[in-house]
Length: 382
Image 1 (tube, rainbow, N blue to C red):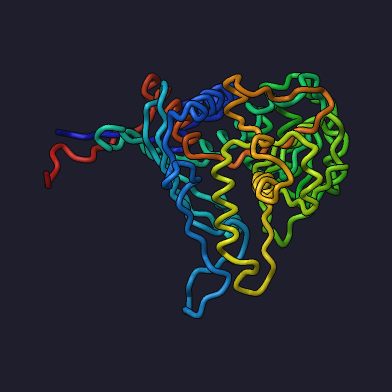
Image 2 (cartoon, rainbow, N blue to C red):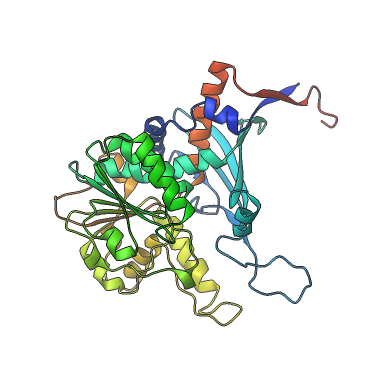
């Protein structure tokens, strides 16, 4: 029996609608609904793992061995199955190296494979950079439809890179009252900061004011919605403070959220996309020890791990950390008052990649986009 599959390069993915912000937000809503109904599979014995990650060491006695010389140096395999209208298996695979940027490449280079659930045969193999960035940005925007105040007018972008550009597109699709955007990059004149400012000016005429911020505090204060997607190592991360956030603020973290006064967070509304995933992160963090190979103190900078820490220390009860999927499925109310501060950790899961990849694949089939490739007409070995 012959097997063909569809190859979609980045241009094909754009034609197939990978940048459709509203469509991606709707897809992520479907994903979290199915996640809450347990109609999915992830890796690991408890089906709750982000993926299998291969990290490079800070130092090695082996000459020429690849080292962790910057943020996000790793390879990652992220398998998943998602049911419902998708009923598809797949995997995102990528390597990440901050040095890529110096060579005119994205920090991470990603590919996504979709497979037939029954046979395991490949259905599609597609460029994953835009797909991954859009699903990452769409998830907090989807959460914002449940957690942000409907009259939110000020959006703060912390980390003006690719992820937050896609997140911005998705926020603007669901928060029509946004009229001011604050931007905090590595510097006020960084390339990514100025590029995002220009993108906003050219794309969203409804935005009346763009403020370039010099400090994290400046960017957080007076913002109705804070979107964090900073890619920094723990030793270079700036600490957040709860007093920076106004009453009613909604804070969505996709990257680095360093917070040391953990007990202060107990008075906020805490939401996670996958509690078990952060619990596993905490276990892995503890297993690696209190210091790294160079003797530097380890600190976690993921918002969801802060919540896990509070539960483990007995400061809060497990049920005080809300599941986004339960909010989507109407089991748990999201925002209960206009003035509460909501903190939502969005770590991302491969079911999101598989889902948005599937929707793009279906669009490509309908529009005749992509290149058909042959695996075999008849397998050599049976």
